Image (cartoon, rainbow, N blue to C red; front, side, top):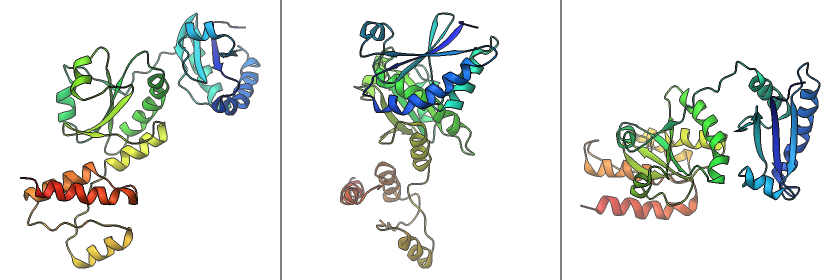
Length: 275
């Protein structure tokens, strides 16, 4: 029996996510206990063991930590029985080493050059002690791995807003985590989900062209018929200032609901009328 590694869940009895995890966690615990080299899973009621939860910086439920030879590492693996089993068996291997993160760490030395040279990049401003940031971290990392392997990769990056205070202030990051999309250095709000699949789908959508060029009446008519609302602009060329402003407006205001239509029209008219 090895006690070199153990997985500990800090939970609250009333927590819905904890209740959903419970049967999977119990099933994984049974399988791992019966292995040739058993691995144990444990749990702590954080509403009773408040001092213990505070000592280990538990700010949300469930929080899972791996303790390997006494060293605490946040669990960022799957939350299904077999996923937990495979993840823990892999981590129990004495030769296992954590893979390098695919999320780029940005500082004042490389931030501006990186975002300026990126067609699209998602940047998270975080604080090391922030509970929401800790919960986002594994979702963000897994999303980054998927997006990195797309035919046209999308990069995810992060900035320690405490260490890089000037950058956080420059870009208006006043809470943690704050996420922004950058296109060739220009900042846009990130208004998407904060789970792996949600981040992936949102960023894949954001990477698409903000408008579709139509070169015939037939194509335009067919395109208009596919969606409820269409904004059409007519321009002499892609060198036209109005064209560039129209595309920029499209990047800023990708319509996702009827309630945004009037705001979009106002935005476009303001952009096009500006000097």
